[in-house]
Length: 278
Image 1 (cartoon, rainbow, N blue to C red):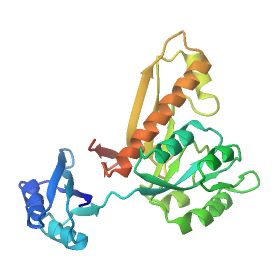
Image 2 (cartoon, one colour):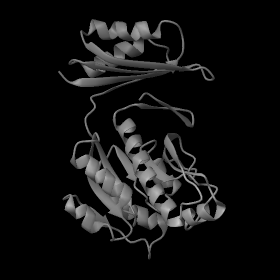
Image 3 (tube, rainbow, N blue to C red):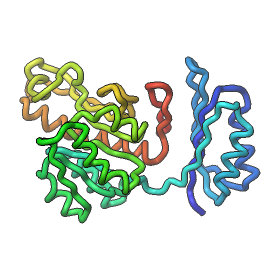
């Protein structure tokens, strides 16, 4: 039997859990995990149910939908590895960690290709026998550069794009092609420490914590729904170099956790917020 996940979002009302599990019972599946949450401000109900068994996906979705309010979103996922394309620039830590985790089966994913606007990371990607595409941005407009990337991305039909320290701002037109399907990682100092050398700026300011944020990309820069945030304490003994190294460690941990949650279908969007079933 194969593990599957039923994902439900709808207006809240009494009896929703009973209605959903009743349909599953009729299909003879074995529920192995169930989590639900009501966001009281919007009166929205969210539920993630993992079960073993073989079902007709369309029929099950249709029957669950019929038992729920008319605005219900119902989706069945078979938890197959998510197909991703990674965008990178020069920094290796997040990309390297992602490739290692994929190679050892620690992430429910399959990397289809890596695209970078610098050639520096090609030897790293080649070690994992994955396609690496270097597309320089230096003589191209943002739109032209993204058009070249799309020539590679679109035939691959990835489930998600992952920005592993990709240091270019995507155009709204590009983002609209992949709604809630682009995951980004950045240091948590934004917007306090923007621009070049954020860790030097943090050192100069004497910060006491550093951290990282993984979020979905939207048309508004760094304002997409947050998936994971994490911080670690630092003090006056940390140099700017120490802060930078610690920041890289946090970034790769945060990105890995966010991708695990997304790829295992544990993330629901609730406006510009997220509901996480971990």
